[in-house]
Each structure stands twice: as C-alpha cells, then as structure tokens.
Length: 253
Length: 253
DNA sequence: TAGCACGTTGCGCTCTGCGCAACGGTCATT
DNA sequence: AATGACCGTTGCGCAGAGCGCAACGTGCTA
Image (cartoon, rainbow over all chains, first blue to last red; front, side, top):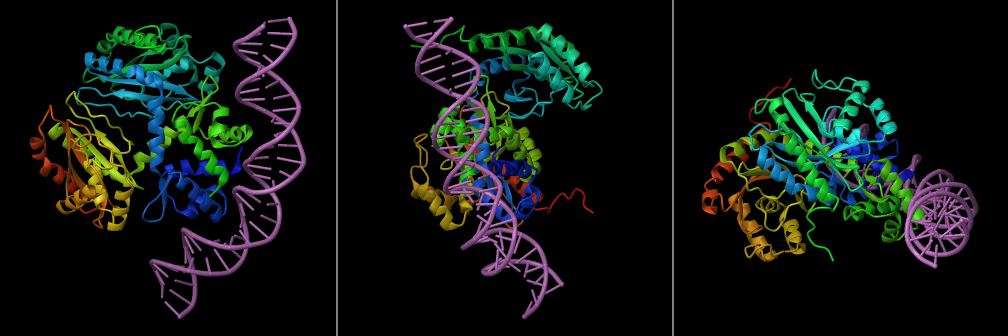
C-alpha cells in the first residue's frame, strides 16, 4: 500500500538469504541504486540492517532484539513456562509450546530433553504445518472454510513415508484431532521422532496455544510415549485454566 | 533519511512493548490515523505486524522467521556448532557463542548445561556489555579510539557488587583481556554465575566471535571453572583454524 | 595510466504519501 | 429502541517527499 515502505521491507527477506551489496539490492528491487541506498540507510538507522566490513549489507541486530522482545511479551508463554518445566522434570523429554499466527505455527517456548539426543527446533521457528502434532491441533481449531482453504494451498512435503500426503488426508486427520482433542506425530516429520500434543484454551474455548512432548524412538517407543498423553493433557488443562484466570489467582486489587 | 520508511520502522519498537491499537500508534508517531493505518497495512502485508483478534496490532511471525534465517546464515555459527557441542559434552556446562555488531554483542549459539540449573539466556539476545566475558573479548578487539568512545557512552549497571563500575575500570579490564587473550566474568552479571571466555579469530587475526563456558557456583567454584580455561582456549583455536580455512579441509575443486 | 566497478551526491520533476473530512460499524448509556 | 461516543476505514486534492538521472570520487585491475 505504501510504495516506499513496501520496497524497503522487501529488502529484508532478500538479505535474509545472505549478504548483498548495493548493486544487487537495487537490481532485485528493480530500482535505481540511489533509491536502494536511501532505503538501506533508513533500515540501517533503525538497526535492522548491518553493514559488514566488506561493505555488504546483512540483517542487523535490532531484528533479533525485536523478535526477542515480542516473544517475551506473548503472555501465554509467561503462564505456561513453569508448567512446561515441571512436565519436563516429570517425563524428561523435550516440551514445546506453539501458537498459530497468520497461516503459520511458531514455537514460542521449549524445554530441552534431559536425554543427550535432542531435537532440532528453536524458539521462533515456524513449524512444519502438515505433520507436527501442535500444528494439527491449532489448525483443527480454525473455522471450517478457512481450514479447508489453508489445507488446499499447502504443500505436502514427504519428510518421511508417514508424512501427511495430501490435503484430503490432512483434513481427515484434522477432523479426527478436533474430535478427540489431542494429536500425535508418529514419525511424520523425522523418521525416528514421535510427539503427543494437547491444546491450551482461553476463556472463550478457542485455542490459544498447543503444547507437545517429543521423544526419539531410541529413548521411548511410540506406545510408551502415548502413555504420557494423560499427563500432557492434564498439564495443558492447568495452563488453560490459569490463562483463563480461573485458577490460582495470585493478586488483584 | 526516508520519512515514510522511518515512520513505518518506528512502529516496530513501539509494538515490541506490547500490543497497541490504531489510535495509539498514530498518536505516538505524531501522524494522522489514516497515515498510521497505511503504514501498518504495509507492515502487515510483509508479515512484520500481526493483527490479533481484538483488532490491536502486535509484532508478527515473519520477524521471527527473518531473525531465525539471519542467525542460521551467520557462517561462524555453522563451523563452530559441532565444537561447542563437543565442549559441552566434555565439561557439561552451558556454552555460548557471541559476535559483535554495531555497538552490541549478541549470542548466536548456545548449548545448554547438562545440569538442571540453567542460565537465562537466549540466542539473539543482546549481551550485558560491561560485564559479560564474551563482550569483554569482543570489545577489547575494537580499535582504540572506538573502544574508548564506546566505553564512555555506556551505562554501567550494578548488577552485583562485582559488576564493572565505570568506564575507567572497564578500559583497564579490556586492556588486560586484550593482552592475556581470554576473559572471565566472576559473578559480575549474576551473583552466583561465573564464565570463562576465549576468542575466535579470522584469517586476518581480527576477532570474529567469542565463546564462553558458564556455570553457577553451586555446581563448580570459580577456581574449578578456571581449570577449564585451557580446554576452552583450545576449542576456540580449533574453530579459528577451521574458520580461516587452514585446517580440516573437507572438499574443494 | 587508463579503465572499470562500485558507492555516493545534488538536483529537478513528478508521483506518492499526507492530512482532512465524511462514512460506517460496534458498544455502552438512557 | 434510540442516542451518542468511539474507532477503523475510505476518497480526495495538495504539496512535498522520494524518485531516477547524471556526474563525481575512490579503489582495484590490467
């Protein structure tokens, strides 16, 4: 809607691919070098872009700081965190908390497994929508038309033979998840890793987040992991209740 | 330099403080609502801003994705990571990797302690400049005038009684660090946590990163932690060599 | 020394982004 | 149910902000 800002912001994903010099930026934006320079300077002043010693541009420090601050302000996280830690202490596995936002699902908190084998994931990282247990829960909660539309336009990468193959299968899975109120990912993302997930709901009953426990086959089998389901669901419920303000009221005037 | 972009980017830190509605944004920017709306829309299209269900705006998902991607592209990280993991396996404590950028020091990688007591830190988080061991190393490497100028304009928060108190003390410390080629933080940031750090150098001898091992007093005393110094320095040197392309050449045409 | 490549600067034209004012929806008040 | 206040949204005319051009400076290569 605003040409100048639009162009400036288009620089960011471009630089995310790797450092680029002025000429490259100007060319890929389709603007004159002087224009690109002005935009880069503005981005630079705000710290979103950094000029490295060889004069090329990269994404800058403030970007991290902003993402950081934004994550910390997400209030579900505050409430959920101690519960996630306790769950981790009880079962020993990796615990994740994720939210849905604008066609994406993001991890917003994580407590690492106590076992040496760890999953690759990171706070702020977008989640594989078609296979992750938390994604299934969050997407299953969308209004039907939206869910359908999203399912249609997704890609269905075959991470493993057990990955969700297509939109039809995915919608069926979502319907199941919606009904049973929990979800799993049994080797659909990484061959040897299983997850069980449960929903966190707000006062109005809508999903605000989803949490999961993940563990590799070498530590516990899928069946053993499923025995943790009641514990996971109970934890999610406690968080839901606290988030809705029902339960352990701390202090209020 | 570019008014429109400048205003648009000013919205980001504002939203980082917490969600805000259109009126608040317009007021704090000192522009008309319609202007603020146009800017917010553009930010929204790029995914940097998200509109939550109560119509207020927050920072959006793409911000995380960008920061994420940028971190992963930082190539020191790629090279260093396996070494950090190995160091963690050998000593069991939390290992950090940090870089300097535009008056800030950022953690770009972290391997958690195997002990239950963990430090609060996160990848992408700016580091306390005046006390952290990695910050001392990175700042000590700046050209003298720049170092001096930066030291003058910093704040010196008294996190603990052992925090660096002022610019003079800091410059003295930096000179020492520069000479000895390693640094410590003995309870200067958090009372009970100590760190030892060593530099990672590029082919030209300039610092490209710094790494540290951190542990709380309850696990090992400061003296015991210092016995790890040779190991930390050796690891840093290995990374330096590999980063400079000297050592374990993998493949090249 | 000449040539090239790249970042940088100043400037005049014009298109873009600005604020105004009016509209429309939602919610609380009477 | 009707009123009014509040907020987000829209269309528009004006002016100034941002655009591209062309010329300059610098550092590297041949």
